[in-house]
Length: 85
Image (cartoon, rainbow, N blue to C red; front, side):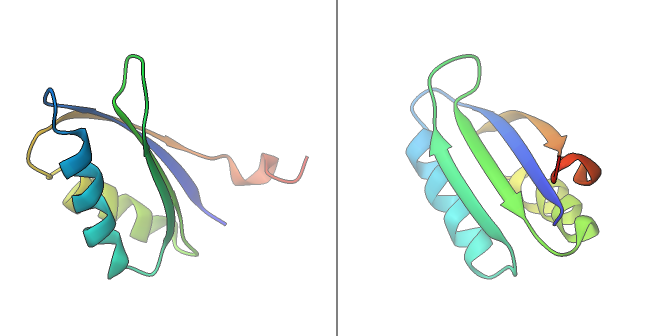
């Protein structure tokens, strides 16, 4: 199953509002997800899974990256062929 990890940098103090907005956006989409605030270089980690890799790319590009107060993202797509090793 196509899976992506998205690391987000946010404006200072906006983590909770971004997490809530991500949850709102993804509620209407046919994807499974986990989203959590983290300590370190990035502020939020989002894991997305869907049957359609193109759908994941579209959600990340057209919705997640356009959330106000998201400064930058780093997306890592899972290598599907290695999932069952």
